Amino acid sequence: MPPTPQATVLRGDTVDRARDEGRRGAIAPPSDLVRAATVLHRVEAFTPARSWTVEEIGAACGLNRYQTKVLRRIRGMAEVRADPDGDLFDLLVPAAGAALRGLPDPTVVRYLLYAHTLPDPAPSHVLAADELRKRLGLSGTDAFAVTQQFCASGLAAVDIAGELLRADGDPMAKALVVTGEKAFNSVLRYVLHVSITGEASTALLVGLDTPDGYRSGGLAAGPGRSPDGAGSRVLSYAARTEGEFADGFRMSAEQLRRFGDTYNTHLWTAMSDALAQAGKELSDIAMVIPHNVNASLWLRLCAQVGLDRRRVFLDNIPRYGHCNCSDPFLNLVSMRERGLLREGESYLLTSVGIGSSYAAMVIEY
Image 1 (tube, rainbow, N blue to C red):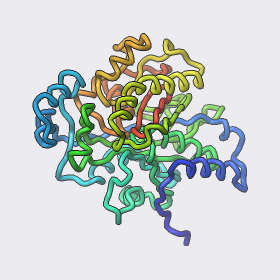
Image 2 (image 1 turned 30 degrees about the vertical axis):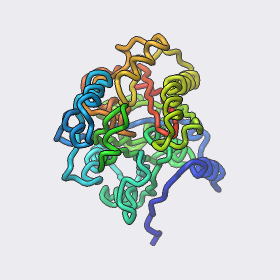
Image 3 (image 1 turned 60 degrees about the vertical axis):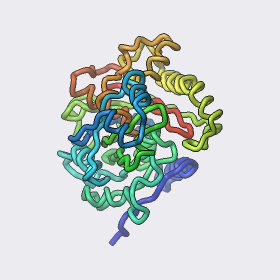
Image 4 (image 1 turned 90 degrees about the vertical axis):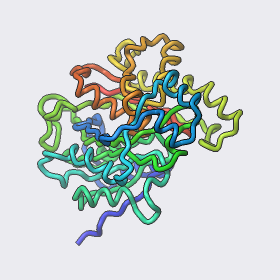
């Protein structure tokens, strides 16, 4: 009997080694898989039913009324979702289960990647990725965590999933990327002067698109489409890390000032790199699907680069606040549910993790 897969944590150079080892495997994957684009067959999201206003969060975090007013009037925050009675897996399982629902053969899910912002989203004796694997019934799946890029870890996990599938050699293979975590204290709930965090989970069923248009796993209903219309082809992924901000939440006042001053410059560089890799101009992008740190940040970036603010999906900032790694995927699902996505159009997803990592991804819906 084969050993039970165990959860591990992929960080930094470990990810690079995993890619290299996959490429150096004893059996080289077919050339059509090596060239195959990553496809998001399914994208699902879940948010708790209970909502909390900015004022309620402010009171719980000990904010004064002026700090609360800044969050609502300037940052664009209104409420967040959170379930104080639910645990981490009550948050993660609904979206993950929805992404797997209807999959003809769950054994094709070779990899489960749990992307999260906090280094330890669960008690130290709980391997969150492995526990999630068990609760989803994925007994033959390798489960591991992707972190250290903080809120940018979700986009990184999608990129890693594609690399693993290309090295796997089986066109039927799938990966499940899951995001979401609990903000279990006031330090995590309130990002100083910038944002408030809510709870949301997302799950992406990831596969490959071979040159002949074949979509594996019985999910395809036309080019790049799963039955629910959520299929999207990944055209590019770009990420950069600025090590001078590695102290993260422990940055000095001067470092925090410089981090804020250079935030949009580094973010725009990552966005531009992703566009260039995809062979696109900003004018080719139907919408920017952002991370939900706050509205004022995005309005400032729009003014700096000449981007029409109506081409950035900001509607979820007052609805959900900042939900860590889940933001761009939660926004993607909201846009799909509202009929804002158009087949064949390109969309630019972004995320930034304190520390600081800046990431962007272009997809074709």
